[in-house]
Amino acid sequence: MFTKEVAGTANALVGGWGNLGGGVTQLVMGAVLFPLFKLGMSAEMAWRTVCIVPAAVGFCLGFVIMRISDDAPKGKLHSQITLHLEPKDSTTRLRTMLTCIPHSNSFVIQETTLK
Image (cartoon, rainbow, N blue to C red; front, side):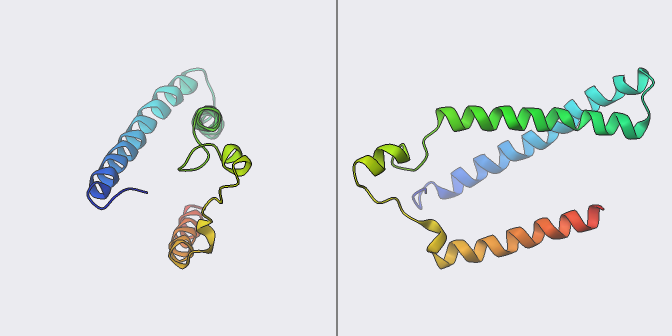
């Protein structure tokens, strides 16, 4: 996706924004959670209610990104198909599949240990 000269910079930038997003999420969740306690909600009900906030934000951002972004690196996928350009199929590449395995396993381990 990026050339070798800027790949490290791009990874660092994305990692920094990811860490910032995690910190902001903690602040927002706490800012929404504690007023629910003051309203007399139980801890379990307040936590379940406050989890709607990141789900709603994620859904809205996903919808916005879906509407305004390109489908593929060379532009909209629909225009590539009408021009008879073949999009690259990254799922058939061995390197892509090998990186999917540890990612999915780490997600399963995280979900298992949190329950």
